[in-house]
Length: 317
Ligand code: BDR
Ligand code: CA
Image (cartoon, rainbow, N blue to C red):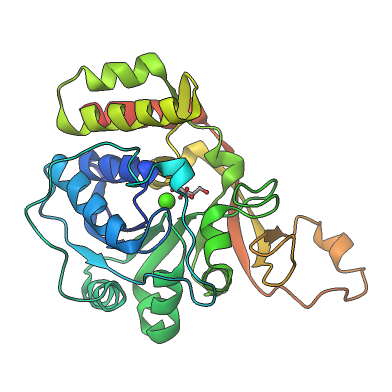
């Protein structure tokens, strides 16, 4: 018997590449998309919510509940990424408006109830600043027992994008990200090191548009809009790669490392500090830093051709 689909909840800030992840989730037979929660990030929350509803509507997945969460980080005022995602967050595309509204319940409460009620432990896939998830884990730690694992897009071993040292989702809410990595839940960090490797070419995007299948066609238009924005002939599938790693974990190489989030430095706030030292070296050092006390799985390599194909095939079929 084939394995049953993995129950997933996505937390998004839609966002061109969140939209690609939503389309992958909407069409994959290997995932059971239980719900989608929304948070501030690429654009304001009041734009993220309609973007998310409209993308699901376009993909014919009006059965998936959508809940709106927090509209600002735990500490700092919100900032956005309109230069990357366009003023409306989805590359300037105009989508038909969904005929439904989000759940009446706040996303944090919706997550609490849904996770506690789930028959099978949930895989949480945050693709956005971690404000909703950190608030959930702080206010309702009882949910941890029914979370299979967290696979989040965020952070980097190497260079950042929002700043020289910090990736956008973590830089938006460093306090929240630090709560999540310390939560004691099996966690995979799908950071920029692998995020930057999974791309689609212009002919592949054009072929998606030509399929006349709603999810594929929209994915193609989003990818072409992103190519247009950057003036390139290929572009990343971004957040959709993190979700691909839930569908096919074997194509992602991860390695366990202590990770904490820098909360202070003027140049390094929001940096994910990944301790890659061998124990034998680290243990001999004087205590220059407090113990990190947490180990998560950090993505180091990705079979990019595999995730590219998985994305193209899934949204098309
Ligand atoms: C991340 O930030 C956003 O721009 C993308 O949607 C992705 O989640 C990349 O840093
Ligand atoms: Ca995102």
